[in-house]
Image (cartoon, rainbow, N blue to C red; front, side):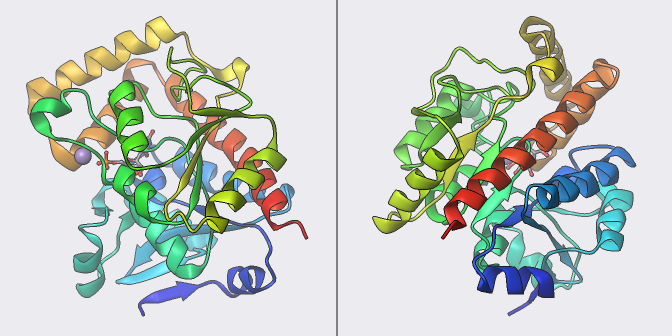
Amino acid sequence: MNLRIRDEVKQAIEEGKPVIALESTIISHGMPYPQNVQTALQVEKIVREHGGIPATIGIIDGTGVVGMSEAEIEEFGKRGMSIPKVSRRDLPVIMATGSWGATTVATTMILAALGGVEFFVTGGIGGVHRGAELTFDVSADLEELARTNVTVICAGAKAILDLPKTLEVLETKGVPVLGYQTAELPAFYTRTSGLKVDYALKDAKEAAAVIRAKRDLGLDGGVLITNPIPEEYSMDPEAINKVIDEAIREMDEKGIKGKECTPFLLARIAEITGGESLNSNIRLVFNNAAVGTEIAKEYFRK
Ligand code: PSU
Ligand code: MN
């Protein structure tokens, strides 16, 4: 198989240590250079400080890499959007043609599972886009959560998506949506969305117990843990929602569709807010790295 697992990661998996997968689309398509590289390296550091082993995942020359080097992360950050964004349907083509590829939540889950990694920390997942009743734009991330056995720790989903519809699809697909110390679904830049999660988790221990129960039952698929952005970095909901509406209007005017939607909206929102949203984005990923590693540690505690 076209898979390269860093030795340290391989050994950690064999020893039942908490390995944390990290995605590469957030680097190449989710943030500008050089903040993308600085963030990716800092996230790896936070995972280590909490006692985990980071494994940043991407595709290099057609090989799925589980545990990229610092130089490789730097290269993903520099090349940015010129690297193809790879979801499930793209994966075989990118591998067969020996290309580079930035892995989304869906493909990071696929490669993590192939490599034996059970936990994955990111910022936000893809979901049902606004207007999906006409465009049918539903991220393949949701289908992946339905079938692949990886726990994803995120800060909810951005209001660029239709959050109620996203929750409905996750329910249909049997994906538990759990709030980390909150009963409300966080909306990425904000701690609140007005929507309830399925269950609130008290702590990392309870999270680990739920994941274990799902595995023991043989129920395939992911577990989604939504962890709200820290209060001090959260944005004013009304202000950020106005910006999101404006960015979506521009996207529609420009006729941007399909896989270009999410990267366009992220970049436009960062531009309009003068970098404030980028800072929030970075901070929430740091927070997810800390919480995600604590949960993985509990899960692997003997
Ligand atoms: N949401 C974010 N930041 C991101 C993404 C989503 O807040 O970087 C990326 C992730 O890689 C996610 C992908 O898996 O966008 C979803 O894209 P699409 O909607 O085209 O499936
Ligand atoms: Mn889409």
